[in-house]
Image (cartoon, rainbow, N blue to C red; front, side, top):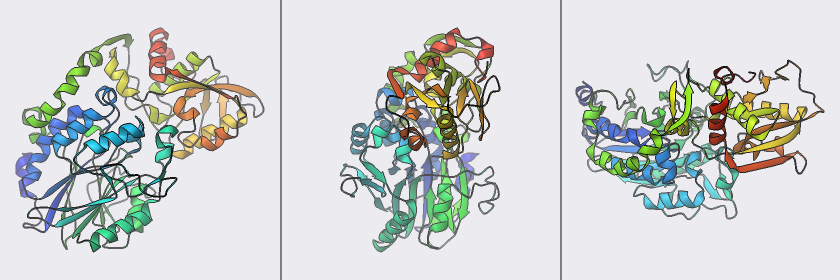
Length: 484
C-alpha cells in the first residue's frame, strides 16, 4: 500500500525536483534505523533525494552512551545520511567526542552559527561546515545550511559547550541562503536544530494548532520571501508539515518513529506528505534494510544482556512522564534525589526524564532510556525567596513544570506539603540533579547570586542510580506523588 502510494504522489517529474527526507531527535535509537531504511527506499527510488538529520542523534540509549555516539554514526552512515545538524545533546559526551564523531562521518555536520568564543570564527573541526552544495545527478542543485539553537549552552552541561558561542538564527540563515544562491543553488534548505509544534498536520497552511512563538516559526517569518524553500527542524520533538511565509517546515517524530518528507521543485509550491512511519507497509520488519541491520548488529549485541537485566523493582502501574505538570516519574526522581542527599526538597527538570517506565518487572534498559544522562546529584542551601525564583525561572525557560518533591508549585507560588508557604528568609536544603545545580535550563542567574559554599555536588552519585535505589525501597503509593 505504501509503495503504491509513494510512487503515485509525485508532484512533478523530471530534473527539477528533489525529495527531502528528515530525521529529528533520534536520541540513539539505532534499532529504528533498519525500518527507516526500508520505509524510505521507495521515495529514494523516485529520483533525486536527500536524507538530512536535524540533530540530537548521538545520545539517549545504552548503545549510544557506551560507544559515545559511535554506534549512531555507524547506523547513519549505513542509512546514507547526506548532512546533519548539531544538536545540544550531541555535545553530551564532551567536545572531544563530538569532534571525533564529526570527523569520522562521511557526511558534513552543518552549524553556521557556531563560533569559537575566543576567535569569533567557526571551530576548525574536520567535517564541520556552515553549508554544503549538493549537485544531484538528474536533479537540481540543492544548497543546505545548518544552524543550532542559540540556547545550546543552557541545554547541555556547561563544560560541554565551554568556549563555544551560538549566534542568532535569523541573520545567519539569511547570510547562508544568499551565499548558496550566489554559488548556484536552485533550491535552498535550512537544516536547523530548533523546531516547533502543531497538534494537527492535515493542511500545511492551517497554523491554528501551532505555537507561533516556536523558534522555527520565528525564523521562517523573518526570512525574505523566496530565499529559502524549506526548513528541516528538530529539538522540540514535535511533528511539522506546514508552510509559513512561503517556507515549507518539516519535522519528523523523535526516536525514529517517523521520517519527515517534502518534495521541492523549482518554481513550484512545496509538496507536503504525511510523515513516513517505519512500522507501516514497506517499513515493517520484513522490509528492514539489511545493510543497516548489519551495521548496527555489533552495537546491539554488545548491550543486549545489560538492556534485559532485571533490576529488582516491580511497578504495579506505569510511572509516566510529562513536561507540563509534575508526573509520577518526575515525582519519583525528585523524591529519590531528596532521599539520597538528605534534603528537605527535591527538584529535577522535566527534560532529564526522556520516556515513561512501564508497569511490570523493570529492566535496566528501560530505566536507562528514561534517564539517559549521566547526571550527578547536588544539594544547595538556599532561601525560600531564591528557591521560588529558581522554580519560576525553570518553569519559564521552556514552559515546563519543575518536577518536585516535598513541596508544591503552581507556576507562581510554592508551599510545603503541609500547606505552608515558603518563608522568603528561611534557608532550606534542596536536592537536584547536577545539570540544574550548575545552571542548566535557565537557572544560572538565580544560582549565581548564592553565597560561596551553598552548593555541594556529588558527581559520583547518579540520578539514575539514586532513583533505582529509591524505587527498591519505596511503597507504590509513595512513588507517584510529590507529597507522599
